[in-house]
Image (cartoon, rainbow, N blue to C red):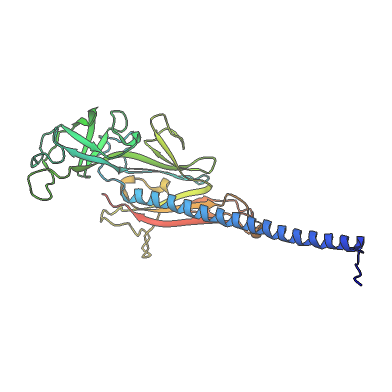
Length: 335
């Protein structure tokens, strides 16, 4: 005879089961929260590393290209008010700034007026020419020349021009070409295959604002702080930048090399305020200090600013932020 047990669970057993279940759920939840927080922190650290490294590399590349295609005498032809290819702004209490002048952006190719790819190829852009056509690359409006503050150009870095008028792709310029600039007929079939490269010569300023944002401002007004004017182009290249510092090696004995001024066998670097003549700058030491955008509980009171970067001293207060300090030296190639 089959006997059924209809007793079920007692209240005590049910309560114990609920407690055990709650403990397990709480443990799983705590593990999830901890892991999620750790992932967020790691993502933040990775992002700040990548972002600040990209910013560092952008600045480094522009420093190496400083002076490319500039006029022979920038005191006679200043670029939007700047008379040096490198213009430091030094601070002992705030991030530094640096303005670099050069032909950083290739905007297209130049051709004799009326000549296009595949046309019978004249030997050159003729000496004495004061007009030409530009075949532009696929650019946004920030790179199209004008007659206001995007009016400085260089052909292949060897001939500086100032735009006088521009209509569509046709420009007139000054001075007239003092030499013939050969065109390129790659296969020798008598037709022009490619024009000569032309670059926009402009001033680019790197600075950090009060919100710890690193800016790259093209054609910044010389009188402004880290802000763009109505005729400038402002590009944010990194956030959470706590410091930007530069130091400069100079050539005072005109041997073409950075000086070892104290004779210890090492090149000496100076703060911007200590450089009397910016034209003597031969190398730049770049420092970027970046901070994560969120605190890391596992890094409690282990984070702190460096005591000093170059001549900028910091107040060291322990916190929970992770930081990355990039430092490198870049030589100025165009003299």
